[in-house]
Amino acid sequence: MTATQPAGAAPAPSSPSSLWERSDAPSAPAPRLIRLELRGFKSFATRTVFAFEPGITAVVGPNGSGKSNVADAIRWVLGEQGHGALRAKRTEDVIFAGGQGRAPAGMAEAALTFDNAERWLPIDFAEVTVARRAYRTGESQYLINGRRVRLKDVALLTASLGQSHLVVGQGLVDAALSQRAEERRGLFEHAADLAGLRLKVAEAERSLAETEANSTRLADLLGELGPRLRSLERAARQAREWQGLREQLRELQRVHYGRLLAIAERAVTTTAAAATAAAAAVDAAREGADRLGVEEASAIRLMEEARSIAIAHDARRSALDERVRRAGYERDLAAERHAALGRRRADMADTQAALDEQVTGVSRQLERLGDELAELEAATRAGRADVAARQAAGVAARASR
Figure 1 (tube, one colour):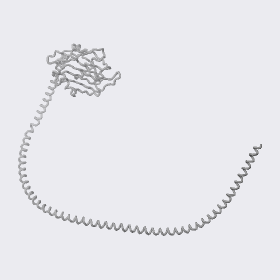
Figure 2 (cartoon, helix red, strand yellow):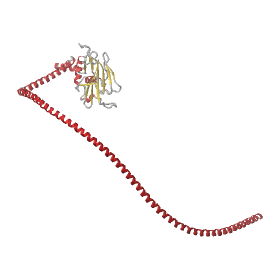
Figure 3 (cartoon, one colour):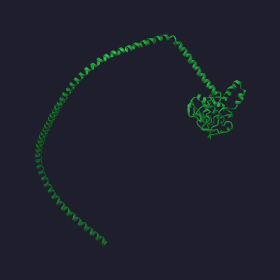
């Protein structure tokens, strides 16, 4: 057996175990183990694949390296239900519990693949993969080639493996030798491939028990229904008589309903003629109604035209009234403006006389101011001449000094 395991897989305590393949089976060649895939099972945190090549395969290692977990995985896949055989106390113990920086796994899965080219297993596949999953919620799943099945299906499929595959754990030989003959019987029956036959026998016995129970129930029902047979016969006779009366009633009803149908047909013919005459009258009345409708539409149109003319006249009269009102208003406004202009003209004449007087006074003031300005300019020129003479005298005095 060749084991490929990712680095860092956590080891688990174990004891030496061996997987034996018996090649001396008297029937066809047994399905050879191809590989074992583990994921989250005990110490195998990550996906680990063990490839079983032809020949003798051995797994060696120190104590605690996880050798026994391989044999436990094979037992577990093949449907082992005893926690003691798996060195566990409950289902959660077979799920990786974490360690060395790894978080606990939520599911444990193991898959065992067989080479079934000789169709030794009772299934039409050249390669058969039996898998089992367990969750921390307590749920377990069994799969055959990826399809969910029952534990019973796995047991029936792998029952014949007892002839060629046997897991022998540490102390199993000593326990077998120390057991009594009755206790060793189960071990030999498993090795002789009697487990599958026992499953079939148990299924047959259960089917027989159900059949016997059904037979007993049927006898009880017959015993209960026997006394009621005469009453049922009388009821059947009455039913037959009732059937005859029912046929007679149907015949009478047929004749009666036929007569009623003839009367109804005659009434329908008469009613159809009356309906035709009524339809003609309705058509004539409809034509008259159509003529009245046309005349009414014409009268309505004339009335609408007259109403439109009246509305137009009303609009023109309103417009003329508005124009007369506006003309009167404008006339009154013009008269008021004329009076205001007359008053303004008189005021402007008075204002012009006052302004003329003001212009005359201002002219006289300007003349006086012009004379005063001439006098001031003459005085200024005389002052400047005096200043110039004094400056010249000062320059001459400084020159003489």
